[in-house]
Amino acid sequence: MIYFDNSATTKIDPSALKSYDQVSQQIWGNPSSLHQFGEKAWHLLEQARQQIADLCGVKPGEIIFTSGGSEGDNWVIKGTAIAKHEFGKHIITSSVEHGAVMNAMHQLEDLGFDVTYLPVDDQGRVNPDDVAKAIRPDTILVSVMAVNNEIGTIQPINEIGKVLEKYPKIHFMVDAVQAVGKELDPMVFGPRVDFATFSGHKFHAPRGTGFVYMRAGRKIAPLINGGGQERGHRSGTENTPGNVAMARALRLVKDGEHDACERERQIKQRIYDHLKGTPHVHIISGDGHDQGFAPHILTFAIAGVRGETIVHAFEEHDIYISTTSACSSKKHTEAGTLAAMKVPDEIATSAVRISLGDQNTLADADEFNRVFDQLYAGFKKIID
Image 1 (spheres, rainbow, N blue to C red):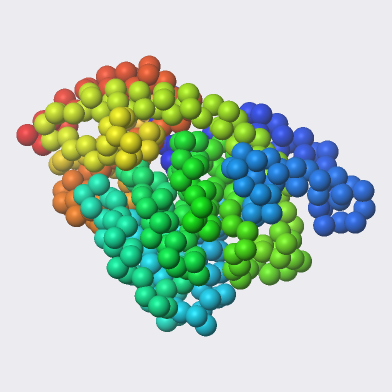
Image 2: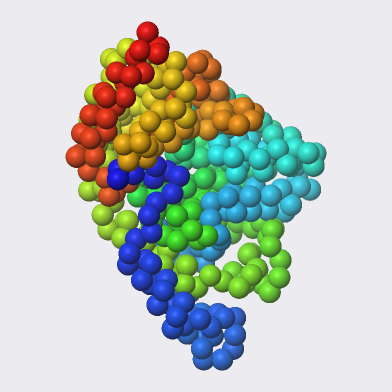
């Protein structure tokens, strides 16, 4: 099997799974309990927090555990809206954000907030000047993702941060779900970034784990109230085994980060070079050498063949890729990145995404290319 759908989810690392199992079986106490068994669980939880903070180059008090990226996005956006609504109801985001951000924005619009959706260029990238122009006296939040999940565009987070240096009271959130292990930490944890959201299952941790980086001094309202866990930011009994496993998974990813990125660039380039120039094939992502794109995502389309058809054709050869969310295959209602880029419908509906992981090899790329040639010969009869 060749798994090229790592942006959707990754396989849990065996050592992370072992950590999860050991903590679940041996130290299952509630970290909030006063007895010794609860204290052991609490210390494990705080060790995990410290390890993640050290790996990210931040303070342990700036790490808040969540259930994943969607919860983190919703919490920062809505928590800011609740905490700062007296000072303004204007929010700025991009037109290519993940659904967790977009749908949270839509919900706030229903509640009377005003959201500006910034346009993007033909590579799916926001212009920092547009951010500057969109800022108003009542702006309370700017939310722009680090890496686009559909085509891999790296957004100009540092440049946007420089714009926001003049506006210290505006919160700046970065959805960093696709940025882990891609050598982007200096950008994600930049001096003007206030919040960054992460999802464990994107880097070989268990599903249902994640964390938010919240820069010291920033305050937002909690979405989940209860026993006051996570220093009152996110109530609910902590997922101790999941968070311990997530810390281990993150350490393993960070240990091999540079080599993994280099290998992903090589794999991406080999496939890119094979697809380039093929009639009816439109490559939407940059190549492996393009520093404006993440090393692990390559999106292309075979005009005239629906994305779902391409995905299932590769699946028959035990190769797993995905469609993008350019449109919903059932409802055709989601705009998505390609629509925001003004990609023609006949290409957008044919788009598929390869998303690499640290387990992939150049041999996987060669097999993909071989199968592509075989499938393309059949597709060509349809589209010619």
